Amino acid sequence: MERLRATRPHLFVRGDDPASHPPIAFVETAGNATRLAALDRAGIEAGLRPGLTLADARARVPELEVFPHDPGADVDWLERLADGCSRYSPTVSPLPPDALLLDIAGCTHAFEGERFLAADVERRLARRGVLVRHAFGDTAEIAHALARYAGAPAPDERGAVKRLPVAALGLDAEDTAALQAAGLKTVGEVMARPLSGIAARFGEGAATAVRRLAGEAQAPVRARAVADPVRVERRFAEPVARTEHALGVIAELVGEAADVLERRHEGGRRWQVRLFRSDGAVQGLRVETGQPTRDPQLLGRLFAERIDALADPLDPGFGYDLIRVEVALAERLDAHQLKLEGGEGEKGQVGELVDRLSTRLGRGRVRRFAARDSHIPEQAELILPAAAPPPATPAAWPEAEPGEPPLRPIYLFDPPEAVDQVIAEVPDGPPARFRWRRTLHEVARAEGPERIAGEWWRRHDTPVPTRDYYRVEDRRGRRLWIFRHGLFGEVESPRWYVHGLFA
Image (cartoon, rainbow, N blue to C red; front, side, top):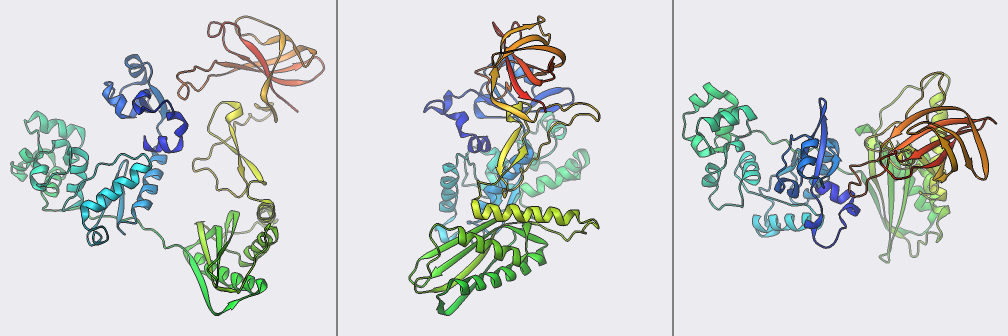
């Protein structure tokens, strides 16, 4: 929910009271049914539970707003929160889908105690709209169980653990239900039983879970392996007062950073240079490439292009006494075999041209199309800067079958243009005649309909009418992509629009 609020804040602007927003659910398809995967607090208070079918949920709460469940995006969001929490401890372990484990042993002196550290974590995350429940524990399992199942931090850790429900043991649903059926409602009641009996009936895993919450055993903590940022710098006893000399130093530092990236099998996509003048002023340069690279010559040319494109040329003043090169964004880059016919070489030259144009003209001036995961035609593509990273979950445009005409026209009107005097078969037949741009078009051939429903899960308060698309060819050979906006019975009077032209 916090990820949704951060990435789509416009969805929640409905007055000052957050409670005015309708319940929100995330859904996923399991078998032939669409079920709820997660809910916000309003949805739970309305009586909904994960696992319920979407049809039953809407029958109970008609105003429920639905979004697709994206576990990958949730993990990415958790990783971003872990990056922010690395300021408190070098050992931060994400526990998907919604927990972070911080080993704060020896890290509390900077905050005058663990309570102040926890308060600072809550305050910083609250600024991003993240609701936090924290707990301290002698082991990772104890802290995780208390944070998830205890109502508030307790001064008596052992007593609080014993009062937790048996679900805190982390067993599967069947074993948890069996423990509850046996009359064991809390962790303390399970701890009072002999471990040999627990292991004989529920398996060794159940006994191990009891020992871990009792503090007698603990699982190893797997901290994230975070690579050190690539940063190289050079200090000067005598300030560098010439821009040409500074460019030479930048080229040398880029070569040193490239050697570090080569050992990591990585390449940089975003390179930054900071030039510290002796009078305290700091000047910065940044270049971005469409593909990861560690070629010093290419980067040297890009930095030279960047300097030439500056509105205000670099002014060394009394000289630079420190020059630093940082790789702000690095990605995997392995050696690859070139094709004999030189195809990869041509691809690399195109990439270098795009990088040079982006550096000279500006990052947003050179753009490319990328597919977007949407079945709405005008929303199925994005225009991104050519140097921007590809989307985390790339989509693909629909492709026509071999020998068949294209499914989508090359040119789309924005917005679609209305047509008049349409004669079509009722209720869902193709158009036979219509007037567009003051010209009467007699339809000779038509294919369709391709029915595209509105994204009801995004705009539940304002339903979007269904579209029926047709590929038509008039008697003069002109091919158009036309659609009926709204079905009979769905809207009072459906309208027709031309959305694009085929070549």
